[in-house]
Image 1 (tube, one colour):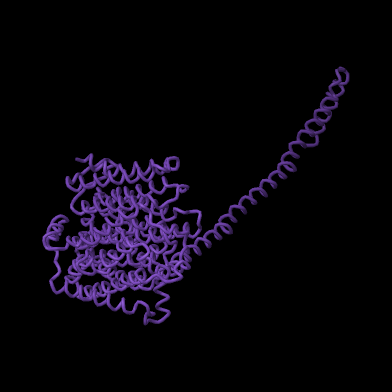
Image 2 (tube, one colour):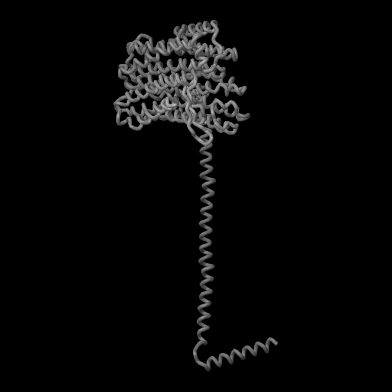
Length: 623
């Protein structure tokens, strides 16, 4: 059955590549082809989830590229494929004919394929490859409208932030090799020798938190909202941000192997859920509110991983994937129809487009954690796992659940208000609205909304036991009846207060409100703490290179030229002159030597006599 597994990843990767490369010439057929590939991938995912295939292939010397569908990845492949299918079906009516739909649908399928490899990879090298493809395609999708500078810059910020955190996986891979794990299998990572075990864990945690937009990396998710709405619906529900949470859930044994990793991850998740929830409350842009709520909801998954709640985190992940993708699609439908995503301008939007309004309301109430909708039960599963670790963790998680109810009801309050008389004046602030909902919108939107409402059955006693057995977490705690009642009461109270006070300014200092609206200035902090020092160091090194290194090279070159000129002068005026003088002297001696050679015998006799006389004279004088 390994052919099913290869087919599962080959369909989106190959189909996406073909559409990205050739789709611009077949624009009218691209949406249908993209949806067809997604449906086929969903079918393969269901078969793989039922049959649990494994596959491997040689990669490097002594290392293999391993793939497998086990209990946890079975849930994930179906979730990823289902959300991808729904989002692409919605996107079929979202782009104009002149836009390169082949590039969009191709990149979306490539991204989904990379995510499928990520969740089925059993070895670290293959995980790294899929992780990189996911990062690259997310950059291209966020910056899909790259001719607009602010969108291209947003893609760069998102890519560089996640890319910096991704270096943790390379650190983990190197430490794993140094720690004696030659195969680099994920399930072998906890067996590394100390201190390499701690290095591996640090790298994995940093990479996962960065990908999942947890604190302190959350700000990149705000920038990612510059991408098309279908991109937000896919990347920020079941794929990109869920990848980090999935990795932590997959590697809970690695977190347990160290004394510090589990508590650190749990508290980071709890802080993210609470703090980013407050950020969501402060937003006036619907997509920004949903983005901040995504970070907050991912925080619950991270909290579950740190607390050892694999089944709880999986339930939260699946329920959030359906809920958030539906909410983003509803926001995208309004953006296309009305040309705005500002909450004040969306007053009465649910009345203008009732179907979208109903779907949005159900999704928002699910996000608020109201019973009996899915995220109410899922959050209680997470909180039950947190309570076994620490009562303080449970309290922070419960407070975050109350904040989730506030930001969810805030969005519902705006879109369900009576339509103002001057509603048209607030439209078309982002783009020119069509004043209608595309025909491709209702089916995927309603399907995701239905899933968001009913997936809470996974937390019921029977399905919950089945899920725990599926992911190998039979010993996980379940929420007590009083916990279910307490969380429901907290959510209902928060909803009532938020609805009552929605039209009034929040009773908080303006500085705090501005900080929350600006995502706690995390991006600015990153620029001051990381970007500016790095750029300053780069400029210093460039200046050192120009003035010192290059200067030394230039001075050496000048010295060489000066030495060559001096050598030329010495050669011309000394050596050559000496050679010429010797030659001149030799010629002069030759001329003097030729003079006695007259050919006359009496002259030779006279010369011999004179020479004999000189010789006798010398002998006499010497003696």
